[in-house]
Amino acid sequence: MSLPPPSLAKAAIATELPIRQIPGSYGLPLLGPLSDRLDYFWFQKPESFFKKRMEKYKSTVFRTNVPPSFPFFTNVNPNVIAVLDVKSFSHLFDLDLVDKKDVLIGDFVPDVNFTGKIRVGVYQDTSEPQHSKVKSYLMDILKRSSSIWVSELVSNLDILWDNIESTLSNSSSVSYFSPLQQFLFTFLCKVLAGADPSRDPKIADSGSAMLNRWLALQLLPTVSIGILQPLEEIFLHSFAYPFFLVSGDYNNLYNFVKQQGKDTINRGEVGFGLTQEEAIHNLLFVLGFNSYGGFSIFLPSLIDAIASNSALQEKLKKEARENGGSTLTFDSVKEMPLVQSVVYETLRMNPPVPLQFGRARKDFRLTSHDSVYDVKKGELLCGFQKLVMRDSLIFDEPDRFKPDRFTEEKGAQLLDYLYWSNGPQSGSPTLSNKQCAGKDVVTLTASLIVAYLFRRYDSINGDGSSITALQKAS
Image (cartoon, rainbow, N blue to C red; front, top):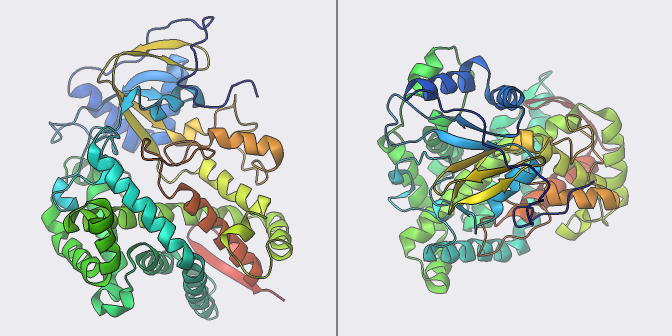
């Protein structure tokens, strides 16, 4: 590997690299963004959209448009500078260079009513005083919940897989997505909010569906769901959705957390100077958007990678049963390097958050592997993580899923370039950066789930949506 570890953006610009004008174009007003939107959602799809332009311009850095755009997003500027290699992408984590204010979904920000008329922490730049309050609060929640995290995870996994086994006994295939989301909702409510959904029958029955509807209305203008075109373009991607359509769902979730998570909310008020409303809305966002939404995308990819590979299962089974002691803990899975590597490789191949954004805080020079580019203050950088994480100058056979890629010394070095969490896996979330507060908890939780599965089962057959066979451990 020839590159130094990040921070690549802070590294001195190699004087031998040529200074190049950023290629690409935004096209004619209205028509250019509309054309790019149709390519992005309809004719090419996101991965091909970025690949084709990278090939056209012979560059991993170029100008283009990303949705949402015309006709009814008059306050959204779709113009971005795409950064699609590891070196250029790393600039998105240098907060001396980029501003993270209101760029979670590019230049598009859903109606603030979706979060109780409060700009929650994820939309705040580190320069805003409220950011450190909110992130401190969230990091404290994770620290305090560590004492119950694994026990709640295992007990709720028991319920999930008991139900899957029961259904599978009368069927040749079981769709597990809905049960998985129910598991995630119950588990995350308990460990993050200290709120048990079973105490509220309405929430216990429909809480995950409420979260799904709340998430969907915020994200629909920016994602493809694969329905018949042009209906998707006309009805899903042309305008932002109003909050009132899910106000009842959100108010039910708000009141549930307020009533059942009193201790957690009180810590936000007393310990971190947040109002009750700020504490609840920030907690709901992290629970629903970051945690529930992220795991709902990531875990099916992880199961798919494992369930389709019998040889890998044998290796995982051996490691999960021979390493880590008799009881699963955060420390026990640290003794399972292959289990952890499979989790990392899944995050590399299919990062749950596809796009990362940052707005230039000042004029600066951006460096890719082969060129240097001038970026102007206010310009929006956009990285499509699935392509960035397949940078052939960093990862051998980048399009191939290699379960042991992140094992041993060389694999540990590659963690410097695994950027799924708004920063490198080798980095740490702090009050002065925007790296996911739960970055380590996410990977350890996923590793615990893999270890759990192969202590419970000898083999698993299925894919990213369904289970077709389970062989209990003998």
